[in-house]
Image (cartoon, rainbow, N blue to C red; front, side):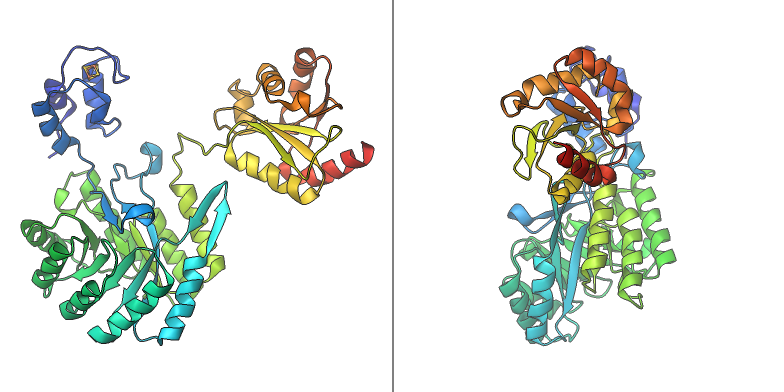
Amino acid sequence: MALSGLEIYKLLPKTNCKECGFPTCLAFGLKLAAKGAELSACPYVSEASKAALESASAPPIRLVTVGAGDGKIEIGNEVVLFRHDKTFFHQPGLAFRVKDTLPAAEVSEVVSKASAYWIERVGMCLALDAIAVENATGDPTAFVKCLEAVKAISKKPLILISRNPASMEAALAAGAGAKPLIYAADSENWEAMTALARKYQSPLAVRGNGDLQEIANLVEKLTGAGISDLVLDPGTRDMAGTLAKFTQLRRLAIKKGFRTLGYPIISFPGETAESPAQEAIAAAQDIAKYSGFVVLDSFDPAWVYTLLTLRQNIYTDPQKPIQVSPGLYKFNEPGPNSPVLITTNFSLTYFSVVGEVETSNVPTWLLVADAEGLSVLTAWAAGKFSGESIAATVKTSGILEQIERKELVIPGMVATLSGELEEELPDWKIAVGPRDAVDLQGYLKVVARAH
Ligand code: SF4
């Protein structure tokens, strides 16, 4: 049961030393109770208090790991219902499912396509995270054969799907890698699946029939049998029912502190979809609300791209914008008379500018100022992209050793800075570029002709 701020305060050192970043122990205790701080921020909590506080301050949704090593997927550990309340910590794993009813050659073909697919967006590599293998035949031998075909192609973590304990045992014994997710224990097979999860030290999914009380009863049996890494499937498949059940699960865990249902959720948006587009729409809902694993049945790069992008947007911490390193960048082999542009180190801004500069084929220098990851206009309004800071970037970036023509192009959004910059950089000509990155190509071509 969660402790109140005052109860937490009683267990803190009460020295008000401020090392946790809060002015008093009481302020820290209140923040801890609101899940807005981490206990580890206070270095002086006694071991006894730590034990009491850790269980009370543990995230309301358990962190569950599937797979091992670099490719492992961590899901759960969420503490809020809405991202703007704090942030979401672990993005849902996206898995692609194959069934053992498919011929091995087809399994290899679709798995190699799904496994090899990746995109780069704002400097980050985005890809599917796992392969789900389903024992649709119910036959252990077919299941193992399909698993072997998948393993020959992909090293991604696995989700093994079978309600038949004999099939699951055969797949686990055949070597499904470290910590595959076993899907699923239900009211009939839970004892056998529990034994397998214990033997292979794997996380276990629990499938309900749409009734949360039934799934809570099942979870209690599993935790009573010593299984703590669980993933929940409430059993709903239609979009409205799924949204309702997933939201109830999240609210129960976070608002009511109901630990029995405090586990990540798995979803199968393709099971009731009539087309890849419908599946993608349902998957988008699941990513936003509140799936920990989304298992896709179709692999269409256009839809997967959309889902990966959506996931990245939702799971980026709004308080920590994605940034690129400030400094000097060069594109299309610039020379001493090439134009010099400047922008901020907000990733989206940087990559928008870079995309246009690269495709213009105009040799260009790009200075990236440290604006704490803010976009041009926001940084200017916050005083982090000013004449003074731009001049400092110019002087320390090393551009002076590279060029003869001192002409700096500033974003059109901050044309107002040109006067200030002429004072800060008296031997530079300050030019005002386009307001939007999309107009940079045309602008650079005109500049290149003039140079
Ligand atoms: Fe109190 Fe610990 Fe914060 Fe110091 S670091 S003010 S002792 S909670």
